[in-house]
Length: 453
Image (cartoon, rainbow, N blue to C red):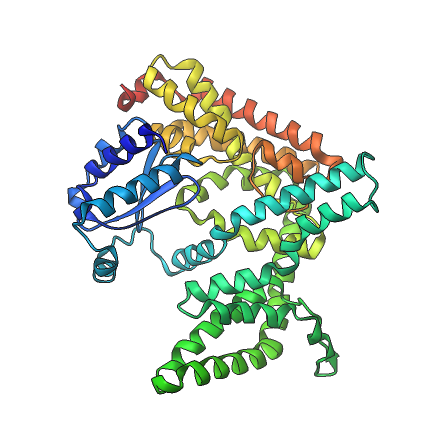
């Protein structure tokens, strides 16, 4: 830990109103997420002006954008300051304050998507690592640098592909936890779908197909088993709970899964994959432009992680994902916009903010640029979206697709179909250029950057 991280944590805590005003805190890849006891004691403008803070978002929690890597170190220092204060008990206050939190944009649909996001966000590091190893291995084999039947290629394929064979178990575990059930029972719900022995079951004259329903079926089964567990527990004596409750929950969920969730999940999966591929086939560049241009607003709401099961279903159903390269152009358009602002502005603080966030943006972590630069300025966010649309149209025109899911930006090239890597990179450069041109010509004037004085 560096002294700079400690100082940043101290400054943030001071502007939050001190340790006594913090109910809970955590971090994701780029943000320190804090739940304040009294939001009126929080100096949001003061937080935004702290050197090292790249932006601020207010939703169910106060989300302070710090950037990848550093956010974990700052969160650790932040926790030490909280612990050292001895002024609050996070667990004691969390339950009583939960009902008082602001519910901005909290429609039932958005709340559900946020729950889905919470299921997949913890899996992102594993998905990125497995996807990169899988993609790089396939590229090396197809380039002829390594024989496909060699032991090295086999080992790499096993290492990279293991997650995708058992992903349903992890998804089930997280889903049950998110919906108030036992994680182990959620994992069992995933096993119900994946279990190869289910092929021996014949219902309505047809044998079950292991894995039918995919992650959609797993989500349905895991959420259901969590709800059943909670309901059954109400009527079971505490002394018998450990035996009776999980047994009944698993038995009921198992029967419903094979009768309903696997067929229903399969139907939903087919509708999603066939619907998206049809849109891209018939809509072509227009569909690519619209999808690419509208992705950044989805990132702003934090709901983009809810698309993870759709990406995985596309890979599971058709073998690759043509949606991810299009959506990845959202970050590319923003990188182009940021370069335009950097070259046009004379404000040193704005240049420092862009310089600190650009490397992350090019590597697929767009939030520092969104919340620290383009969104606060307003119009550059729109021109970034337009640049993303141009890149998305290019990706759609050439049907570029990935073999796994992972971080967008330059690293995504490693998981693009081997023969399409150059096309993906060309689309990325086009999105950079379009975002730059739109922003330089129409999106930014230096007087717009008053808060960066």
